[in-house]
Length: 315
Image (cartoon, rainbow, N blue to C red; front, side):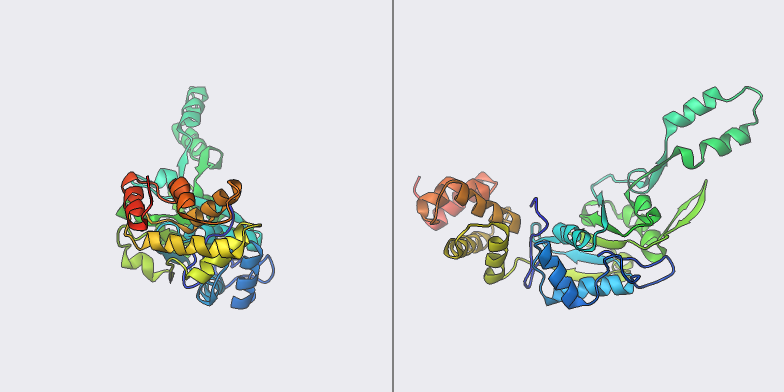
């Protein structure tokens, strides 16, 4: 979803200002004052959080602990990080995980081309050690998301997105960052956080994350919200839609999810469907409207065929 909301209710997918040696958030700087404050301020940026979400987010900030959020795709996990950043006026830094992600893309690397040019430009009579010290200095360092989040002095939300897609070795790399909020660079030493970022890790549970990683985190499981909550999300996200149409749409999406399709409609796609109906000037989700717009929520031909059969759609 393009906006800063996706989920809530029994589902649902902060600016932490703790110093490196401090577990809690510093006063001010947009820090949340209580779970109720979390719920209110997330609602202001159009993320409808229930009590469980609000309490867990508040505790993650107050205790200075990373927050691991698991659940199926499309329930608002990533959007929660975006909403927390917006609500606390923090910078969002995102590390998108994928198979093959390594330290050079997650932590840091040195600018090898620039180093090579510096070596070639060095005087012939210059000692190698002096050149070595120069090329492995701050000037040649390229920050990647983890190091950038650790070094920021301003409020920061670090989103480690879809951690289950990365190789197991990446989790080992994360442990130092999440345990001590520091990064060791052999050539430069250990870089400790001036201000702890609020860390949110998402997982679709494609594989089980390690116990070592989980032990360092608070845990929140998100699922698809109850129909009433999803209706409220649609009404908040799509100004102008009638409540009755929103209810029809949410009921239909619930039916589609129950079909065990390859890709169940996400909350973002529910919202997109509502916008589609408004764009077409439709005020009722009848059989013809569903048949015309089913591609907004179901993205596999086999899913559309199954839905058409189950819903009795003609054509």
